[in-house]
Image 1 (cartoon, one colour):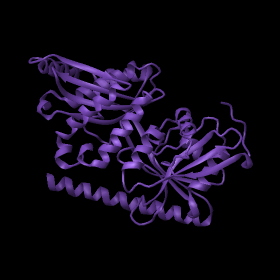
Image 2 (tube, one colour):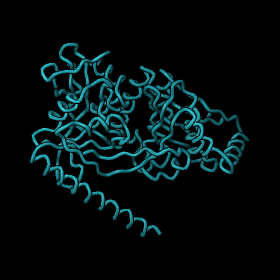
Image 3 (cartoon, one colour):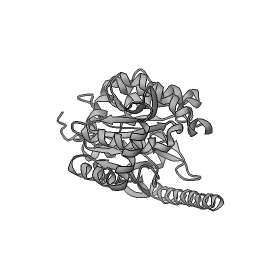
Image 4 (tube, one colour):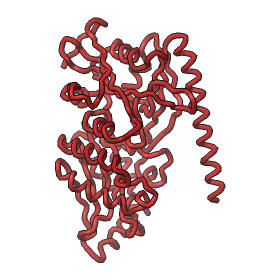
Length: 376
């Protein structure tokens, strides 16, 4: 699709209920598949399932549309949120289940598309926060380049990732070598002493049945004991099943599994879109902990990503400093919270919001230090 430069009169901006039957899912999906930087969590399969079943996350879908063609040029779910401690502002939706706030932006959309989106999404305060935005992405660059809108970035962090091509091969070789390589192979052989060991990779509709096994595996581990496994709550179980089924129908999810005989030892859910992989959930049988099943399946997912036709990039979605994944996936993705503002009020609120976020981050840092001292 070739998009000519649009004037304000050719653009239409909409505020939609993402769950409404009146939403054009076809136009939404078309933009999701074409977006400059993929964000499968903002596509209709995942987002509709999440908002339908998860209480407390109400959001409006802000859309900039080409009136002549009906094509969507930019879209993101926006909600009222306190990114800091006190001040509520409009924000793109990012959660522990989807820590990625990149709006869907058509590659050929012009600056006025981003500007039009901001005017609607920022509300009366003229402030918009975009959390977990990959700062090196083209979407981030375009959002920060709109004339007349002041942008600042806070909460910069890095998380594990890996690339495709020669760089990805080099990253894999660096992680899977020497003592680690020998040890993992030794442990895999020991795992196979009692039964046949195999890796399986499910795609398409086969993922739906495999995901049920994943849910049960996750529930038997520490997440099940502390109440954070997906099946611990009816809402998260319903959301996850519907989201995975929708992604499986379009072949946008892969399930990697490690088996010992007929027993599932480890599994990882990889959401995929246009050569990009997102490591969504991982689980393993703690009875096999001595064989490092989490490391085994993470390295297998790495290997499988590199074998994907057209593979470009994998995001671990893991918290910064994750003890298991960072030594294995050696790339680093820098993300941050983008604060966009316009006008006198917006500028003042932007500074207050930045200070509010900094105060919250400081409290988190102090809490971590106290926890570390108590556990020492």
